Length: 196
Image (tube, rainbow, N blue to C red; front, side):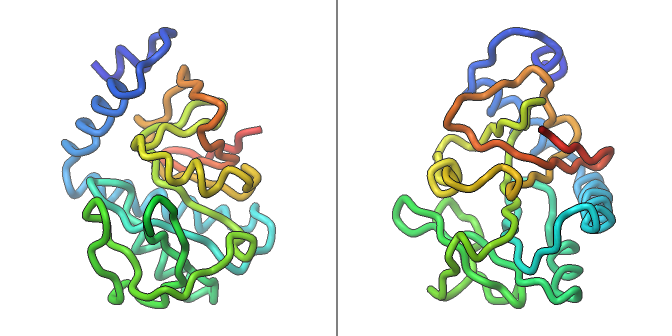
């Protein structure tokens, strides 16, 4: 069903597409999640030299079979990069530096968040890796429906926003809406895509 919808040129209804993609992702075998995540992590780390010099990057703590980021976190820490994670306060996402993945607690929506309130200003973060359910060929993101990232990053240029997804989540015909985040770079287990 997902393949049929994603190959079609029809206009998707976001709730239906979200449901289909989330179901497919949740049905992934744990070993496939881990191996695909390592492939994505290696592709990202190998591609760092293509990115301009940077000192800080905001990752996300994975949930519901999202691409795992632990390997990337540990590698970036070894490279002396500042790694940050989102924390939801009210209707706003704020970002906090995390030296270790041990200092997290369960936050809203049962998503792990860094402990503390030492927020970093958006302008002091070089790159943002945003969790997604899908990305279209124009770089538009299909998120989870809360609009938190869309609102928080609306003034951030797309050249600073990246996505880690499984290849089946790249939906050629998904065009999104004007308020949806746009990515400049997308990493899957099969490819790295630079989107203009």
